[in-house]
Length: 194
Image (cartoon, rainbow, N blue to C red; front, side):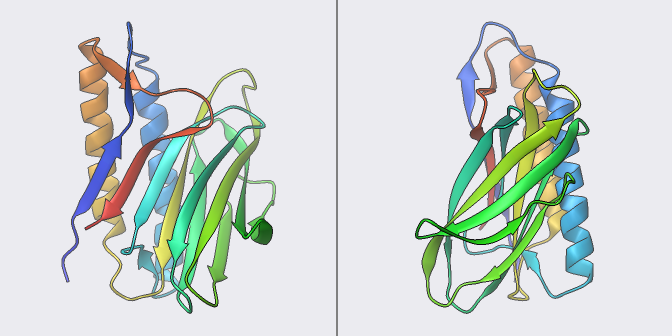
């Protein structure tokens, strides 16, 4: 089975482009993909093929980005979060019906949450940035979603397309027309396999 990666970026009109953004975005994506590849090497998990498999955004220290995932009952999922080089402590939580069902609050920048839901449901994933080397800036973080279905797409393909999207956004920004929506604690990039 062949999967194509489909990505989108949320861009906002801007008078100047924050050229600093592109390396941080690429760094967080690379770290997240590397962590996901290690997990894939240990299991039959691959990139999620039944919904978004990567989201990312800029967060403040003590900020949070949430994403609702429609999960299938009986299917196993692994969620991996990661941040740019300045992120020191990133936490990950999974919520169903306003109840936390899984979490990773270890003091590191690549939390992992594994879960299986009994029936089809919406699960709210929350990334929380607890610590970074610079407290007064925003930091780019990603959430990568894996499934145990044996048909998940290539993580290398996902990384390649994410880097291409980042480069295109930087080029558009260099023209002064648009920039990433760097508003803190909001998703500004997402990817799904089609």
